[in-house]
Image 1 (cartoon, rainbow, N blue to C red):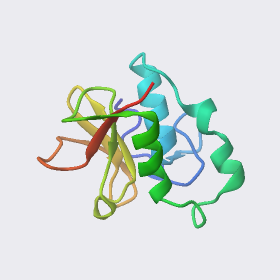
Image 2 (cartoon, one colour):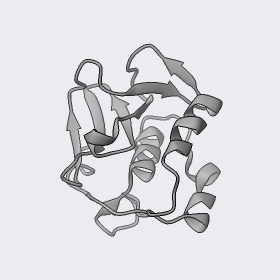
Image 3 (cartoon, rainbow, N blue to C red):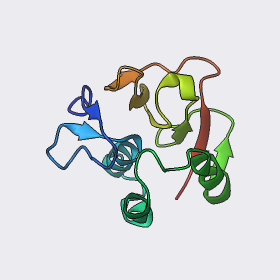
Image 4 (cartoon, helix red, strand yellow):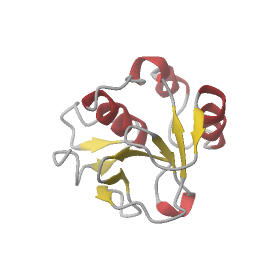
Length: 124
């Protein structure tokens, strides 16, 4: 996952498009695929055609996670993390060694998961 660290945030970009940018959704899709789990990219690609960064209703993310996933009591590798707004990202992905997410500085980071940070969901 080291090649993902340091990518900059940009709506609609992904780690594999060669732009050097990613958004939180594309980031978690690539990581889950690398981990051998289901890749959500095709299931939610329509979002980029209907919304842009300013018009996307952020609360919809929480609703989708509750409707499509199972809330977990804690972090599990491969789980989607719903992060609080002050963390700088909407979604992160749990790895064996912490959390990969877009930090407030708008760069992808990998860090230990602070106690009580985020809510975790399993979606297939």
